[in-house]
Image 1 (cartoon, rainbow, N blue to C red):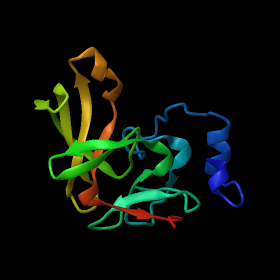
Image 2 (tube, rainbow, N blue to C red):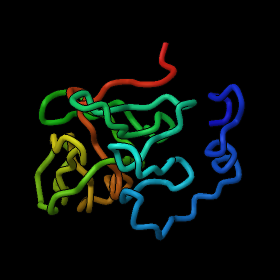
Image 3 (cartoon, rainbow, N blue to C red):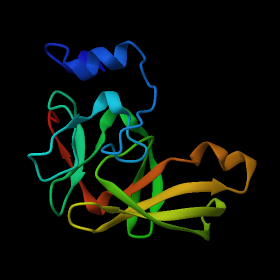
Length: 154
């Protein structure tokens, strides 16, 4: 949100305008809100999140993964311990979807990995078979073991 910035940056101003239209640009990572991403070809990573926002990064290579504003829940369990559910992520690739029986029932999920270091981070919910779990569709799980807090955490 703009309250997190001392001076509202371009990305905060766009978010305040509720311009959440999806971008057709092939440079953006899938599921990544265009207004929150600063694109640069001179850098290692595909996308950088604004410095004025609290972010989560890959613990292995420090690639940005998600903006704190995209965090939905901290109450998830991954295969290696606690995990967070995010609305959108950046610098992440998706494997093929497969059906898995998780703690909350049968889901079609695709493993997600860091585009920079190729470490498996968690998964993306492609389809939930139970109506009470439909809210997870299109959302991302990242395990705490694979991410670190960056920018503005105190």
